[in-house]
Image (cartoon, rainbow, N blue to C red):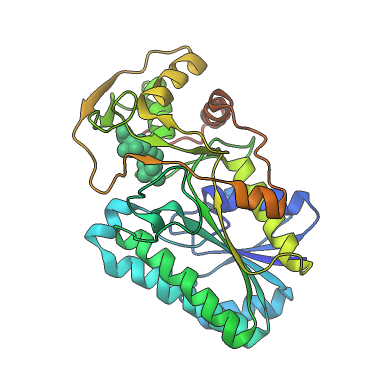
Length: 333
Ligand code: UDP
């Protein structure tokens, strides 16, 4: 299939692009490089620098590449930032998303896989979370992702769009080529590994008074490779007309780890001390977020292949070390 990946130069998008190319698809990456990296785009994929707010550029990309389906990753995705700057999130995630959908409609591109988020559930009242559980986002990030999910359903009704939304839980890990490099970095696994390398100070644990086994938050960490594989399954299923328009949770099969467990696993994997101290809670953090992945397993045959936390953390660490050997790492802030 000829597939356009918006945001395909970012952390998760670059792994999805890698996986799609390996499966023999023709991939074009469309990314404004605000947060992505040109060198993260695998050889074999075309690259076009552009913004999803630019409908003309999108229509041009659809024509040039004869696009048949879209994987839509381009977004702003930091919860804290979204609370302080909601307009930015409405613009990128809603206005940008609608610009993309209109360009798709104009070009007759009728299939999309959308990168959504567990943040659409807000503070869930039960675990593991199922797709039909209440949707009550507690921040503009989750709200804008949900708004786009809902737009997809209306575009389906009006224009026959086929769509799959994948609600990600916590992506982590790396492939040989692609790993996490945000600036500033806010995610737990890369911060813990930077601390292990002595590049960041101590890890601050955001609260240890949650109702969990050790008082720290529980999250469902999924290897970015498994996450990418789910996109391949989704796009191939809608491409072949096998999938109905659908929403799926995307986690690691029903179990989660506390922040302390992640830090301990990283100490084991790296063999290095990782200094950590407890700080205040971070605003907007639910105590536990664990996915039920039953639906995607049943309907798309998804099975996570890299569930072991040590493997997930180890792959991220290997990638960081290799990048530093090549001289590509920037010192941590
Ligand atoms: N976390 C932490 N210290 C940090 C970064 C994150 O304790 O410096 C916690 C955070 O509160 C959450 C978990 O680690 O419970 C995962 O956070 P991350 O930002 O990686 O992903 P999120 O769950 O926000 O998508």
